[in-house]
Image 1 (cartoon, rainbow, N blue to C red):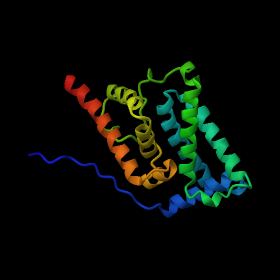
Image 2: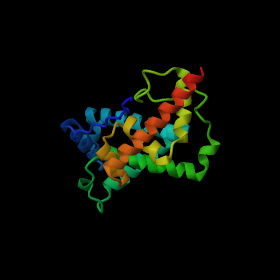
Image 3: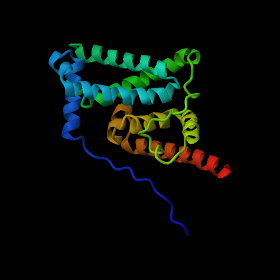
Image 4: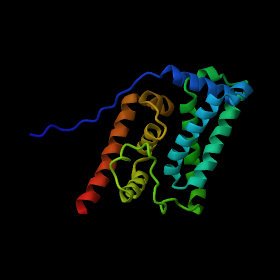
Amino acid sequence: MAQARTESFPDSSPTDDMKDSNARLSAMLQGNKMAAEDPRTMADNTTLTEKIHSAISLLLGNRDAASEVVSEAFLKGVRHFSDPKNNPKNITNTQAWLFRAAINAGHDYRRSGWSKRSRSFYEDADVVDPRDPFAETITAEDRTRLTSALQDLHEEEREVFQMRTSGELMYDEIAEQRHVPSGTVKTQMRRAMIKLRKVLNQENSVA
């Protein structure tokens, strides 16, 4: 009898580099000019923006709309972190906070109906982020099917998949932002992976 395959979900503690990056981003959002002009902060900001933009593009199916949502999330971050009523020290992971803010803004954008007026990017040849776990094993045609399949996932599964693959957040960080147990996040990620692999396997078996 064949043994059932199980998924492995390793977690690790935030590294010192990650902590430093979060501290620099937090200082930048608080209006610290020295932090904002630090080349390391600029690099951190660029990398984070690309990750968030990739995830929101998949959520909305439109890169231009994603750019608007990402900008809104960062503006929200500036308002929140620079508000004397808020204590930035209560936010242990600035990157995860911004990612969650963008996800929420993306959901608001979809509910507003504006996304229906925007041109979808599904006509483009390469629509899946290169950091996704299937990137090295699928064809361009598979990528298009995979992107479409992402839209068919349950909202919580798609969100976890995006935060894990595009955002490169750890499961504990995702759980903290979504206010659910880490085990729930891992289960949702596992379900998303199974569904996406099933789509690819079905298509390839037909071919």
